[in-house]
Image (cartoon, rainbow, N blue to C red; front, side, top):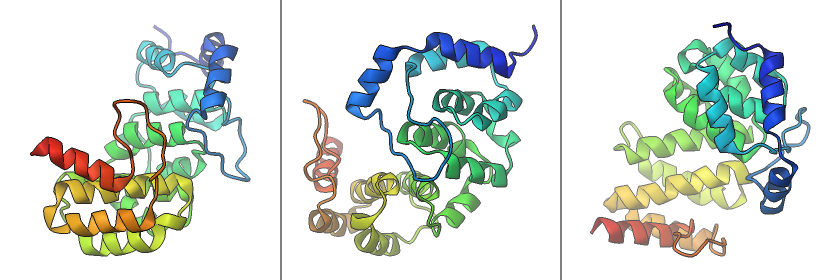
Length: 234
């Protein structure tokens, strides 16, 4: 069976588009967070994410097509690209450029989840991105760091990470701020010797203290999050 072409893939995405979905996503934010000066139509999520997943399964792994979709700058096409790409077929430099170009939260999260976290050079990239001023790189770096924290924190200096979080998180760009907060919470949840300090930093900074949450969901405010997860563990 012939591989799907870029034109065919874009036509499929277009057929899935729905103005009502776009309006609903716009009203609730759709996780959008635009960076200034980055080209591309990355604010138009008019396709249901589940529909993109179904399309990706039908197409199958295709890194060549993924690159072509990514190059369009269209957010739906770029989201599909993250589901089609085979991480080990992307170079570290290529992935670095992709992370810098992911200009909304949903796209950044899918890229991190389905490509970055499965890339063979993710630790080297994490270390490089931890000192980057680019918001997308910083978000990816703290996401990878949070993953390491949850898996035992091998090679991490948790005290130094808490120093950075205390000094930088309150004023961080909203993209890395979310994954920084995730790292803070995971330190408190999984590493009891550092729990009191993580709680104190969360209280001091107040990041996400007033974040709205649906009934039955846990607040992302680190002290509440840590307390609830520790309670469940006990």
